[in-house]
Amino acid sequence: MRRRALRRGVLYRVLDSVDRAILRLVPMIVRRVRSPHLGVILVDILRRLRDAMDGRFKRSLAQGISRARKIANLAVGWGYLEARLWASDEGFIRYLTVLDLNTPSGWGF
Image (cartoon, rainbow, N blue to C red; front, side):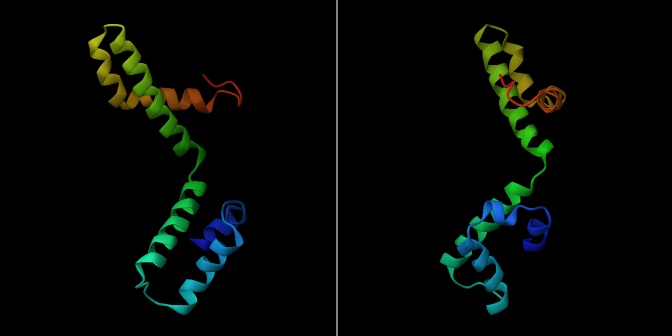
């Protein structure tokens, strides 16, 4: 994980020097983490790296899901009860995701 983050240029951008040192030294010193506190710290560090390495499409997909829920709730509020299905419709979510990918930055709605 550390090597992939380093290759993608994420390691120094996301983690501070203490987190990088923990990530580098723990595998050198112990084979298995027994301390719950150290385990929580490592999981937090790895989660931040994973989130930073996710691609643009995956981040946009999360925004598409959120936007689909908002639009569905808005339509239900207007009285169109079948719009509840829009929040779980994969095609609608993909449409909103692609729409978000093709929108220039700064043009959010």
